[in-house]
Each structure stands twice: as C-alpha cells, then as structure tokens.
Amino acid sequence: MEGKFDVDGLYNAHYDLIVSFIGYEPIVLDVVAGSEEMHEIKLKPATKVLDEIPVSAKRITKAQWNQYLRDFEDHFIGISDNAKQCKIENEEVINFDKENDLLTATSDTAVVLKNNGLGYRVSILLQRFEYNTERGTVLCEGKMMYEQLKTESPRQNRLWAKNRL
Image 1 (cartoon, rainbow, N blue to C red):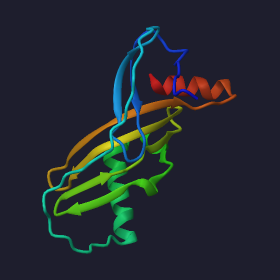
Image 2 (cartoon, rainbow, N blue to C red):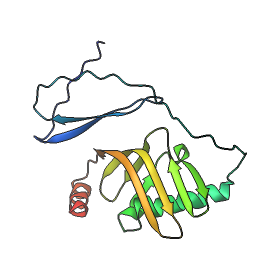
Image 3 (cartoon, rainbow, N blue to C red):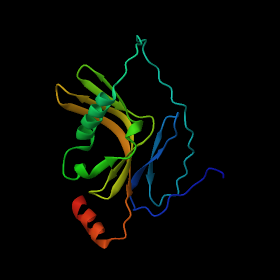
Image 4 (cartoon, rainbow, N blue to C red):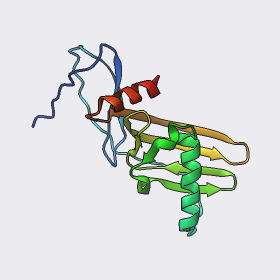
C-alpha cells in the first residue's frame, strides 16, 4: 500500500531493475542482491521533442505489415534452430515504418517473446530497432527481462538446460 517492496531469491550478483509505466520514462537501477540499499523511484512523464516535419497520411497495408514483421523477426530474433522456436506473443504492439532502405520498429509497451527452445519468456522494452535492407545492417537497443517457463516434465527441463549451453 505504501509502494515499498523487497526482491528476494536472487543470486548474489548485480541486476538491472527496470521500472516502467506507459507514458513515463523507464528507470533502470543497478541493484546488488542481498544489499539493504533503498531507492526512491519517481517516474518522469515521457516527452518527445521532434523537429518540425511535414505530415502526410501513409497507410501500411496488411501485406506490408506482415512483410515488415517477418523482416523484424529474422533480424531481431534470428534464424537459428532455437530462434525458429520463438513466438512473439503480442506482435500487435509493434509499430513499423519504412523509409527507403530503412525499416524501423517501435513499441510503447514491452514486446513479449516466448522462446520454447530455451524455456524463457522475454519481455523486451524496445527502445530502437533499425534494419537497413540495402546494407544488411541492424541496430537494436533495449532492455530485456527473462522469465523461466514452467514445466512439470524433467525431460523438458533437461532439454532446455542442454539448449541453453
């Protein structure tokens, strides 16, 4: 009720604690497990200052959006055997734009990726994704939070552990 919390059950290491809320700038704190350090967290409203630009209506067709999603998946997730077992659970939150050879992807909320090959659900605060189709270069910035998937099967747990290696 007072907005106070403890994080227990962590390995003795440094962690990035990400505090975010839609419409506010996320805060990333470096925390050490076992530390009694207190943090006062105050979120600042997100403000975006843009240069003046001409505005025109530009609609992306469903076919274009699907192609941009495939390009995003190929260059953000990859094309390995493990990558083929990944699925974006909320792809509708991704916004695409393409100007000439530059495909950009943004999202106002975390993109959630389920990795059935490694046994993780990954929440990604996608700050920047750019794919230059002519050069074949990719730029990606963001923060990720990993949550281990649960299974009752010891066989599945062994397979995930092997794949993670």
